Length: 305
Length: 312
Image 1 (spheres, one colour):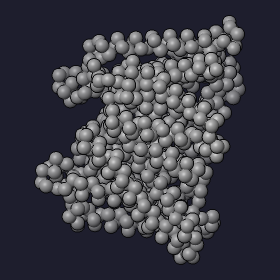
Image 2 (cartoon, one colour; image 1 turned 90 degrees about the vertical axis):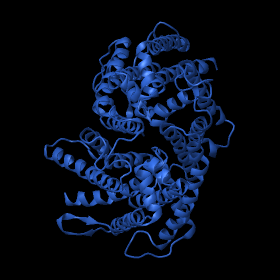
Image 3 (cartoon, chains in turn orange, blue; image 1 turned 30 degrees about the vertical axis):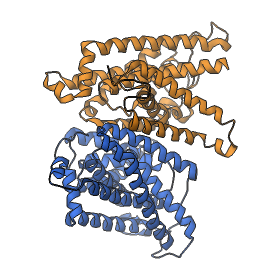
């Protein structure tokens, strides 16, 4: 039971990191990123390829230290965000979201089909877990929780400081009224690009944090619902533009998600096989209710500070 | 080559049917409806439901389906119109009333997309289904073109439907009001156009077209609850490529995507084959739409037929 709870906290923290990144892009800068899963996936696979042991199944197996995996994940996600940003940041609002969604689906096709690179649907095994040798495997969760918790705190502090700085004020200005910010002499395109790259790097780090916990990665995890839209729900529930609210939203949504696992024990077998769709129904209903009744977020008291 | 072109036109006409409704919704209601793909699946599945009720009524023109599918599609359209009008009344109308920004309405439509897909999955299960198990013999034409009777039927119906929608938009009072709303909502309201009526007709046209497009897709490919979500990207690409709100843009955009998905992957496959490189390009068909939209947006950011920048 305790180990179940520790595992819940670890995955919750990883989602909270991704939610903070989305909050930077959407909550402050107004970038409707529907392709979170793409950067999460890039980070996960980059770190997996860099750190896993030698293999003949796919490229890499460089066996680098875990830290190099995290750095690589951030650099690749940020680099791809930079390249995507050129065409995509010319788009506004909804069109940007559609372009990012299309990019996610396209990258998912590549990951599924190019087995020389990613080992396709079989996935990559044997990804090292940091400090796994030093403790009893039974208690490993605590070690990883400290690592991920520390990472979450670090990223929270960095983002909280960044959005309070003059840089963050410009981002908020863009989020509220891009034309007005542009008229006051700010290069909006450049700031949007910086916010997009910074947020995407953090999403990549979240992906790396995920693979070094599970030790395994395959394309199934990166479907749009589990990798992109659950993070959107976390931000919407937690309160757009509210960093602490978003972290709370991440843990709350993940608790509901995991909690519905317990439901399968109490419902008939015929319903239990469709529990995934009942979850999907909940995601839709909560998202709809949030936008309809409390667009500022269920957990958030006021709209932005 | 010509064979790829023919199958591209069939696929493109299904995309175009969906994209015309989506472009009207995007411009008149001023938001991107992410639930549109799942409405496409729902329409196809409701047709499937009525087909099961009606049984076999015999067929015509050697089609793989018969009169009962035509009747099932008509019943499905009626049910879908009730559904979309109820959704608008109880979901999107309150948002319009609140004055929600377009992006929030888009997010709300995303929530609706999950609700619809979950309902389809719970009601029908995630299995693949078919309207008919009959195998069709394709008719051979010159240049190696092979067209099945079903495909011919889809292409002709699309042509007729597009023409009818065009006449509606061009000739009727409501159609003119819809074009006015799409062109300039503020000016349209100021000249006394009944917004409620225009929005209702937009849903009626979009709901009808999306049900027929979903059913055509079911005839041509298969029925899966996830199909609409995957179909959403080519639909949106057609809308953006043609320019949001443009009727001809959606038609041309849909055709361009359908044809290029078939021809580009087919041609690259042939080149790789002649170079003796072993790779399966057909899995990358959906990526073509994405590459196209990037190219178009770099060259013409407002789409082929688009005129001006929109806030959405």
